[in-house]
Amino acid sequence: MVRIHVKHGDGSDQKEFLYDCSTTSPIEEIAPEISRISNLQSRIDRLVFELEPHLEPLHGDAKAVSLLRALSEAKSYASKDQVVHNRPLSYHVLRNHVQALERELNSVPQFQKLLADVESSGEDLRQVCWAGKVLDRSKRLCDYIGANEKTKIVIKLQSTESCPV
Image 1: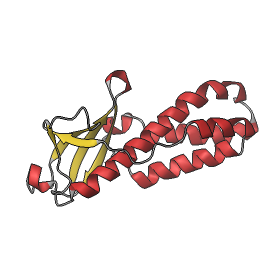
Image 2: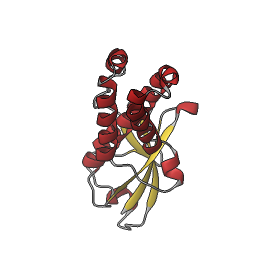
Image 3: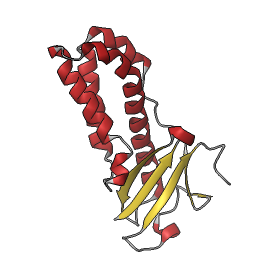
Image 4: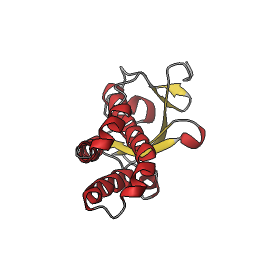
């Protein structure tokens, strides 16, 4: 498996995660999967940012315990610390964390509006860049990095305007 270190965002808001795939994987499959993981990671970060100030008064409330636990689990799974511990993120696990968090938020009436405000961004048109090049979606990963399954690369997700041509 190729270990892809994905970076997205700018400056202090830069997010990163690890993703595993085969060298024979088409870029056409890798790019949307990486983009979906990036979107879920960003959504969890936005929910954490919006919710934490509102949850302070709820500490100790029995109803809020499951919400606090779901928020904590989602936050830790989506954190940059997963890169430090060499753990790749999975789209399905991230999605399950987001769904659990949404269920808990829907059970507390005061957070239903907040949940609607932090809507998920759909598929976006970000480009996958490696070594200063946009990866062509019609090619396979091995066309760029060779056939070694133990390769580790760093990929940047960037908007179509900011990626080199």
